Length: 404
Length: 228
Image (cartoon, rainbow over all chains, first blue to last red; front, side, top):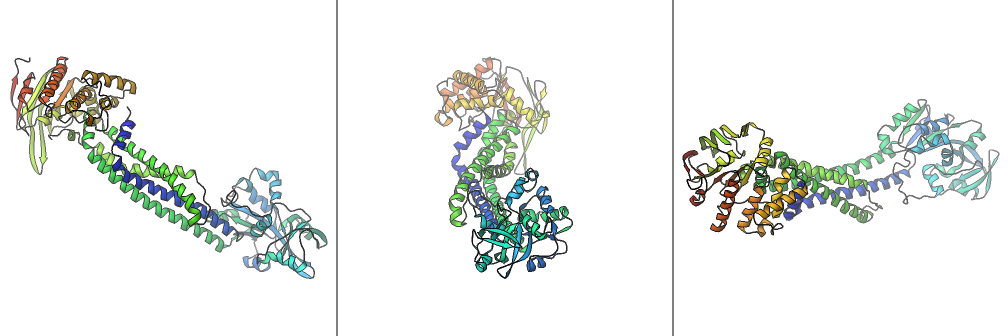
């Protein structure tokens, strides 16, 4: 027989008394796991929605203001394209998407539009020296991209994030207004600044200045304007957690000759939403710790009182205080581990089944929460049981004899 | 040898000071069989607890051979109880959720013995007390006499040299009472020291010496001529 056999048998002997405490800890962990699980996927859903609002960080030439950028979208000042490489190869974490662009005015069918040069994703991946370090070795999407849940058509990705996988040197994508005004459609060709392009796709209506743009490969636009390897701006989608953790300062340090600005409304919304969800989880955790802990402590005190003769007998038979302490803490450990596992399983089941119904987001199981569930549950059980266990260990062994 | 040197034990009971042992000095030789008698509250159980290293005296010393019990650490006294002292209780104090075999295994577990040896030794002890066919019975499934025999087997688990018994026959019918006393006498004949608290004069007569306590002091001492 081992001490754990003794503890195990006692648990089953008095299982009815244990049920309330066990349920308290299981329900507590269930609630925490379910909330954490649903919150996680809600955050991702919110992040995806906010992502649609576009870039939240802009890198501009020093003398250009944010207002200049929004008013004209083009300015005479420019930045070296090499800054993109510098960011991509740096160890700065939290850059989700990088979109360098160079815009020039063009005339098409007697109307003024904007020709915007962008860099397709394939250009990043093609540069072998970037593959081992920099942006593509960092997690892309800040966790916002859920496999199987976030498939988007290529043209829509461009509209939303200014990211497109491939774009040839003679290919263009035309905005909705450009297409409507000029009658251009997929497969047509057009001439811009003396160069002929094929229309690869027409983009859906966005209601923004992007509808008046014609997108072409950045390097083609650079060549056509004769400006060399420069860009007007680099649009960045930064992870909001990293932005609040100092991403802007890091970018400023990396690019001292450029101006790094945040589009505060977007970032604030992201940060506030995440903070609210985080606070909700913390409040629930505090309630669970208090209710679960109090319930276990209460049960343990009652258990020690009820077993004082048994404890006295064990002491008379030669058990020291350390063994008595071990017996009660082992019981707490078993209670905590079982409560954690039970809570994780029920919580995950609840989250997966109820999440889509109540939060409107698809929820998948999160195995790493099992570790936290067991750790929190065990910690609560051990802390709550420590003082009752210590009382048991300090019990007067004379209680095992009746006459005293 | 067990020795008490001017042992006094005072309790505070509802703000009143109670003298449970009053300057008691006593020598108990190895292999002795002592019955402690006296009225309720005379200090019999206090004497037993003090001898067993479970209750520290207010003053005086208690020695087992040359070791002063209360100058040891609490853990040291627990080890000494485990290895050298066996307790028998009036109400047996068996662990209700363990079987007879497991109850006898408890002291062996505390000694750090492995599972196989624990089971072999516990089985052999239960066979010795005539309960070889009741190994898997829980205390509630045993008669009162059988429960006391399980308690005796458990007391013998670590082969103690000193046996301290508190009213071991108090809850037993006359026939079982005789069996238990016979068993204690048998253990004494093996060279173990037995100190037994009892109210029953018939049981006390089976001891070699009888100490009568009154108000926490030894009032008289008799030697049973027939037993010695």
